[in-house]
Image 1: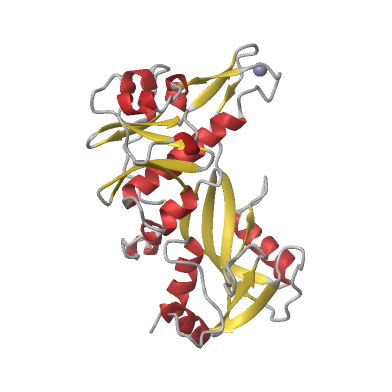
Image 2: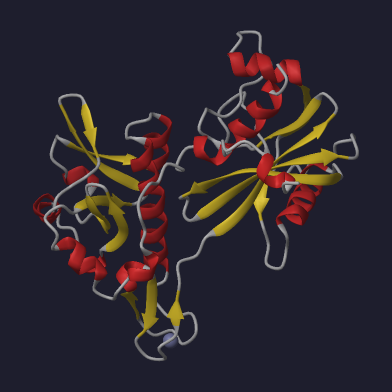
Length: 314
Ligand SMILES: [Zn+2]
């Protein structure tokens, strides 16, 4: 008898969400303190430059290229002492750096594009988008942890950018990932969707919230769903995860079995929360003109949760 878990198909849903295509070999066991400097000395090194939530991309002859060499990065005044080694690709090491030059000073051939637009518009390959998630999260963490949380003294980057050490008390600080539960509550042939005020007009999506310290993923799904909608959740099943560099989250997508129907929406978080039928969701997926709402774009984990349910058994 086989363990039933491994009878599932190999097709992991997480492979198909945006920011999940990272193929870098991180070699986390080989991160010496000078790993980033060594990588910068490699003629094959490729640099990702980021600033203020934007990725710098070369644009020439209709082609978008997010990789810079050391000379190009020098001309953009990148601070090489802040380099972070992401790891090694088939083409050589990949290093992330804050871009020195302001977006408005860039030459015509280089655009500074916010991460969300890079992802929504599919400007770079999925594997590069995955590297961007890693780079964006790490550089944001460095920018937010320049001082020791224990004694307040300055911290310095170590281990190729995977650690910061305090210059006074020697405390070590490690990059953080903030887990967020994102969930689709199901009851019969309906699912529960909500709307935050900042969504695009007409769009509904899954409910979501940060997982708190000491909380399981399942309990976070139950708590957040109840707090936001008043719906009681029973069983919870994990579906997929998505790196989300705003600034360093991991979205953990789950289904929840709704045990109640009456919605009491938290109006401070949601301006709409309702049960919608599978047929209504299918119309939204097809983009029918008569659809009552839209759903998030493909690539978003919310979209995957909604589609996988709506298309199951079709
Ligand atoms: Zn300290």
